[in-house]
Length: 283
Image 1 (cartoon, helix red, strand yellow):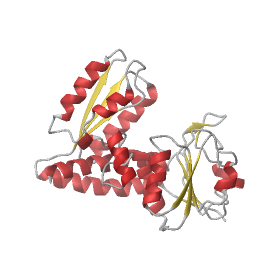
Image 2 (cartoon, helix red, strand yellow):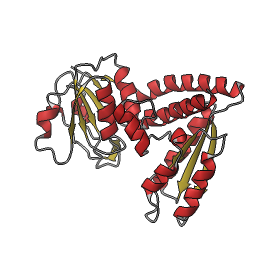
Image 3 (cartoon, rainbow, N blue to C red):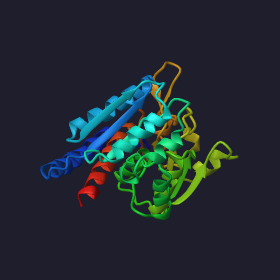
Image 4 (cartoon, rainbow, N blue to C red):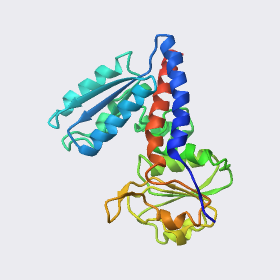
């Protein structure tokens, strides 16, 4: 068996076409969706991520406001800027690029963003809405993972899903989204005694640890769906994920590559959340 590759680039393009149509409809009503992106400091990776997010907005009919600040920006000044953006009717989503300089409390910054504009889905309120099944903004990466799984045509109800990783941004919300889809969910992490025992029973595995070869072919149930969230570098400096892709694809039924899998979907779901925020505001 050789797995079918779940093409995140292709699915992302399809979803962005819908975003562009919805953005055009809102703009025609005088309500162009707007996303504010704040970058504090000059972290090279963050600069790339921010540039890609701004370009995605511009390419799909959203208004994008990019604000860059020096790394010595005070927490007070950042919070004041967020307060101003909360009150700006042109802005429907606010994203503060992480990580922030160490003198700034990231949690305080996230909670300062209006719940109506929390398109990253990181706030305590957004987490609570997800936990209780209320409508709200879903964190972009797990939201994108769900779309990738849905694209295979697989019905998750009754399936066993294993999530490797328990971060607040991916692992925990991923598990909750799978639960909402009526999957039976196991969360594994660094304290799990026998990871392979759990993954060999899984119909769906989502690997989100940030460590190469966390999931090998021997750990995968034949025919499982494998979603690789990791972004790492191999010994040659080549981009790779958490999954031993070359061997895992000979066991799985569907698998995401790195790059070209989950990555493109994260920014796409940010656009989707921003459109939803603008539509809620308009309605």
